Image 1 (cartoon, rainbow, N blue to C red):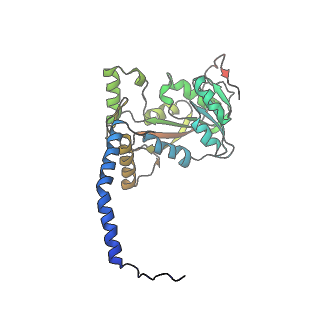
Image 2: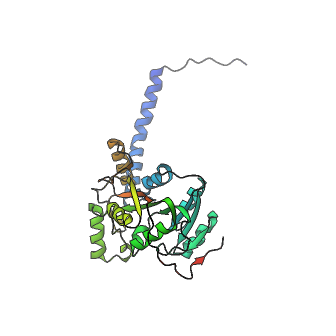
Image 3: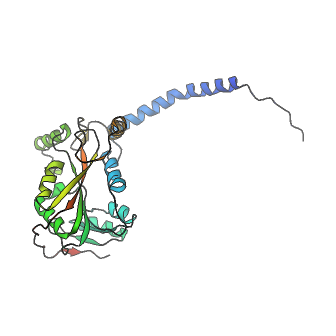
Length: 285
């Protein structure tokens, strides 16, 4: 059946129609964006922007070997157990919270309920000790580092995270905890990366390497649980600063603008061991 031939519309008409559509939808797009920004201000999105570069450093930049025996001290619900196990790392989890460990059982890794300051493992049991977002909770950092050195094989390493303690954000956080009596923030970072390195060197570690994350140190973005600058805005700032400066995350020294760090150090000698605690609870697999 013959169909009527209709010549195509001139390109000028097509472009004019496209422009009119964009102009008509522009106000709606602006309003929608403003609504989103307003919601972000009052209820910041999760997870925190601070996790983005830290996770990138831990999972993508720090090298992990297939079959490497790793102890995750403070493994909590097991997120990093799962992700490192997916990289074929022989990872074990440890935490003081049995409730958290019962959620981590789903990842099928060996779990132990115990303190990082009294590890229920034999000497030289692991090649790496990972301690992410947990170091600041230890009452006696030296005891934890001594235990880490004890259970590590010769040439083993510790991989731990910490935060800057002398930035405007950190200082205001410390002041707010004292003034507002915020008990849930009472356990803050007492030692920055340089102080942790000095302490670790006294406990048998050397050759520090740093992964400086979140180059936002001059900005006070949160006070206890109250965001001053919304999470998504800070994510944009962190990405922009990293892109504009071209500063690599890994370096021989901690970056002055960074708020958070991963530190990797190797075991250099034998450190005195802490006594094992009795009654450590082994969770069923």
